[in-house]
Amino acid sequence: MKTNVVPLYNKRSFTSAEKVLDEVRTQIFRDGRPYKEIAGLCGVSLSTVHNIGSGKTKWPRPTTLFPMLAALNMELQLVKHRK
Image (cartoon, rainbow, N blue to C red; front, side):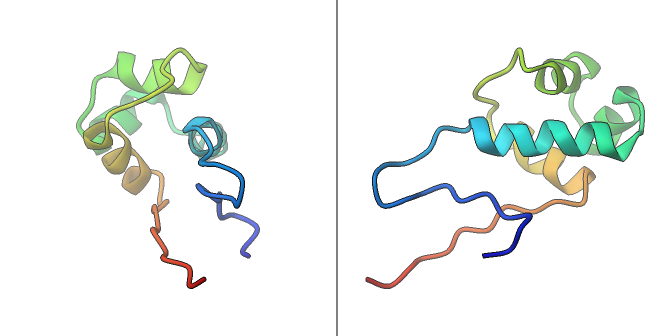
């Protein structure tokens, strides 16, 4: 598995969105751009980016998360594993 890939499923249970959001938060800080610029790139409010970056938001909507991933040069991959 790639080192920058966050598994959303393991044999025991689905993981929460926390691991995905931790990666997004990490990338927000690594990116170094102001929240306002990231918000403008993904079409969400400044407070939305701040709340995700600070950890206040726990379950962002896909319509918020997917554009933010794109603005941070990240992608979400869904892979079906064979049994």
